[in-house]
Length: 300
Image 1 (tube, helix red, strand yellow):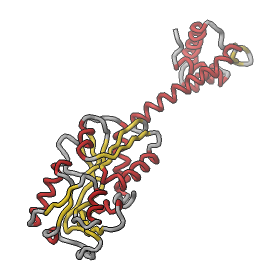
Image 2 (spheres, rainbow, N blue to C red; image 1 turned 90 degrees about the vertical axis):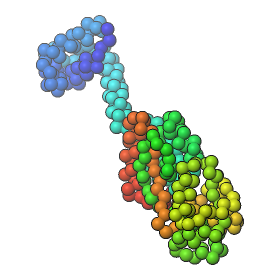
Image 3 (cartoon, one colour; image 1 turned 30 degrees about the vertical axis):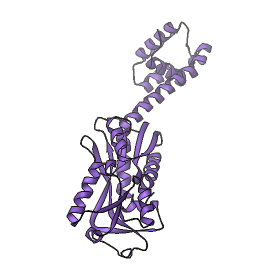
Image 4 (cartoon, helix red, strand yellow; image 1 turned 180 degrees about the vertical axis):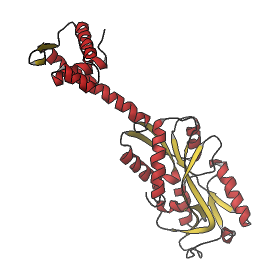
């Protein structure tokens, strides 16, 4: 038989108190029960652990050797219990984060910083990706949480972190570059550069709706899958485009961002409803609290 943790705690208490009476009071059990458990432990180990005399109770030489080992076992058990409790609170674990390419620059730094400060034992892996593999990765469990823009697909849980203006992106020498705001319809005669429709059809359906409301169909002269590519094309004078204001952090020269009247873009934290990881709950809590006090479009 192997001693259980209770017997080890009883042994350590008697050794530290040098008294069965004081140890029983400390443990809040009867002295008789304590004596019985120590006797059972001695029989189990086949050794004598204590000498009881007129001057009190003292550990035997074998008991003295056993004492640090018993303490080590109890400390390790306490550590294991603490790990379980912290894991249940979402303070420990590993999470895989995906960032849409257009959100990485301004979202990844504050998100990772907040989690490292609040949940330092949580391990994060991060990956920048495009929208289609991001959604597929969430649905198939390759990612635990993603930071992206709607519209997405059914079957995912979302929480909006920030809403920012959508801007017309113009060459810096464009006649409208000095405006503080533009209506989308004022760009009806412009040449446009946009992402490929195949990149994410739900986005382009939303774009189509905006253009129809503005009363025109854009003259798309070039398509590029990356935001950096679109910004480069605008800077080169190939055409204009529309992007969330935070994309301005990706290019500081050659282009101008002018807010479009009444148009806004949310950024969402997204996860699969079947993901019940306590670590995920901890991250969702920390990021939600951080987003409420931080301008995430400027914090990267």
